[in-house]
Image (cartoon, rainbow, N blue to C red; front, side, top):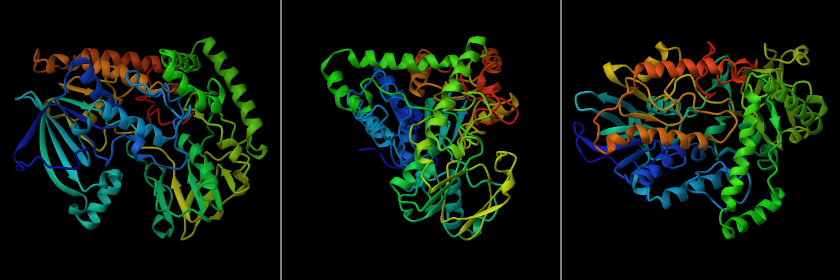
Length: 531
């Protein structure tokens, strides 16, 4: 049984010691724990998870249509492959079950403490260890966003959120909190939220109790989540009408057709993988090679530019063949392919032919009790600017507008040597940065998974994650084997690596492709992609 929010039993001035603490029980935390056991035979660790279940993003995201947009045979651990995927692109629930099977296989259940909000990690240079503040939550409260928890505590008192606070010490700290954690809130430039009488929620905090049948729904956003969600609002939830607000048209790529086709894959692949040794590993490598070959689209070379242009024409052909003609203009992106994350989907374009769906580049300006006002903005397509303000009936607003990415580790505070916080160092150095996305000088005995500049932008994040786990284990092994008591990165190494990384990124399409994306900060610093 997973350990729920459970205080150590010591007084508030006491603390519990673990040789190693992992923050987060998603793919990163689970993978790290497995490899500590596999590679080092080490199991003296504790995993703290704020949410009420394991799985990270696959636990908390439950919107209709959620699925993996990378083939699952590649979006899974190399050390624990699954021969029984029911689909090439399985639903989120199946991926969550896979994670749970990994936890069971590696006997991690008793190592995980749920409903535990780690708010502060502070380095103790006298004792060469980390002191961690853990606020134990009422079960389920950790599934709320930080803003929602703060609001609840302010209105109903801290006791409505927190059970107790405990101190934990550790020799080694590993962060696996991820980068896309806190959903963006209500758009600050949109007025009238208090007057709106309907439901408002973020796609990453789906409200299962909301009755969407026969409702007029407004969806803010046209990213990967929205592309999966919008078609299901009609086919599964029975919405009366869906209006989707788009700021910038995405590039949409048809999903990879698996060997044997979708139906053939689901029927025959499990039999093949369970009977022929090595077949699953071979197919995994072939899929990985096919996906990784698309990296050629992101560079600055003449070859990359030609490849992008060829892909651009292919994707425009796909748009013209599958999306309604009335939307061709506003759905044609005005930036390079790959500048922001592409949508891998085959359902969204065709769903736009449904007369109950309206796609618009008019911006959400304000809301009233049961309606929304849309109006032209700087991002409105020229073909729609003449429309002026438009009032539409609105019963439910679904925010699919992404996540807060300006502050890494937010709302967690990590304080290293000399009492300086991680985000303070990031600010002084021009943006979030770490050596190989994993370590930073001034923060000893600390390793990060899914850190700055560790995302490929085109491939399975699990591949990069396993590489980072390897770096982290190499870094902390001497500490766990008592060959060292403190390991810190050299400042020169960190600065040099970041300079090289940012210089390389300037030539990549993510930085120079002409789009607005969460990859870049306001001053153009890219703390997301790995070049």
